[in-house]
Length: 231
Picture 1 (cartoon, rainbow, N blue to C red):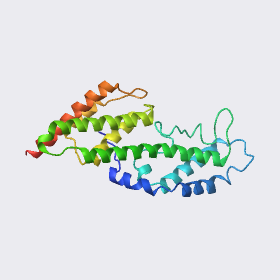
Picture 2: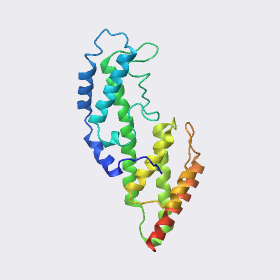
Picture 3: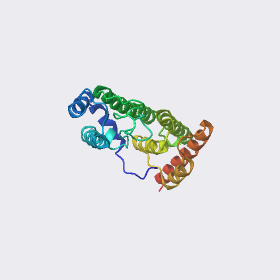
Picture 4: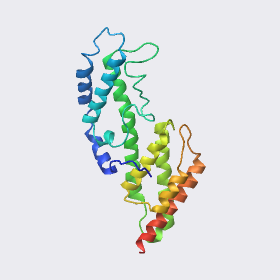
């Protein structure tokens, strides 16, 4: 599981509906338009870097926990396909200096991150609703939990394309999944997850391997859960 402090899933989920893209577009337009007037052909490195830092601050100040507490910052290596060095008024071979075009690239990249969070949210809600809770349903609970882990991983692999550092978001997604269904994996389950879900950039697990690992982790989680209930 991730050791990096993250917002709880409830905080992240509840912040999704507070996003106001029209306000963000207005703020970006107000800042960028006077600095990149029509006819601008190129930015100096100093101009570019100064504007990047300001836009990054603007995003942090005006977006909710779904952005500030998820590591889904604009320009991360896994989501949105956005790169400050090659997208923000620096397209190849000829930079597109349109303010509106560059704002739309930002909005589109943020939308991709939000789409992943919405899909995770729907999945977590269904898992919480359908997960058996009766003591005699241990085997069914284990299989349902394994299904939940596989779906969480597949949603993340699909969203990131298993690109650079995608596994950090897979780790986060599993953390949020257990948070959403109010399950706390014990020491043994956590140790097993770190071993079985140790992935690399640009490579995703085969579905057979993922399923096998998910069932082992789910069994450990249910076993830990049962052990806590008997003490």
